[in-house]
Amino acid sequence: MKVFEKYSWEEEKTVSKDGLRYLVRLQDYVLKNPQGKEEAVMFSFSYLRIPQDSSRPVMFAYNGGPGAASSWVHMGLLGPKQISFPNYPNLTQPVKYQIQENEEFLLDQCDLVLMDPVEPPGPDCWMNRRLPVTIPQAGMPETFRNLSKTG
Image (cartoon, rainbow, N blue to C red; front, side):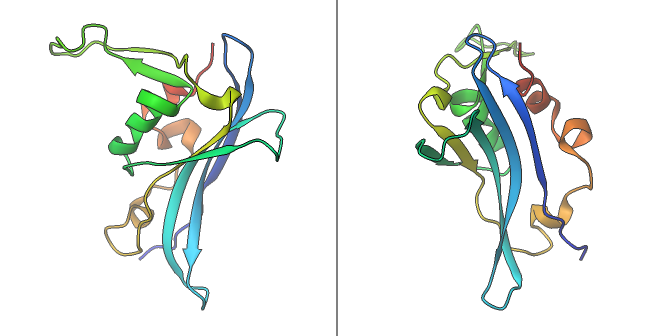
């Protein structure tokens, strides 16, 4: 089994409609037992308003992921961008969609931390299958790269 490397990436963004600045942070949280052995990992997307203020409330949302299930928490509800289907519920193939700013983005009210479920180690755990790439290049699906763009 290859050695797991903890991942962390962050970048400053701006909500184009009102100029709200925020930090997007993606990172692993490795959970260890009392003997220090890695037992599980949790991955998070955080949206933190700039300037940071430790007295701001924080909303923790637990995704259904990892992967596609958690993407709807970002793209459909809590993230800075949303995907919409103009002809919903009368969709045809290929499905047409639009990516737009989330008018209800909660960052003006609280910071957001979206956590994927805890995964135990083992051959099927994503932390053992992950490719050694960085998010801005090939590590992030095209849809998420588009969602992270501003303007």
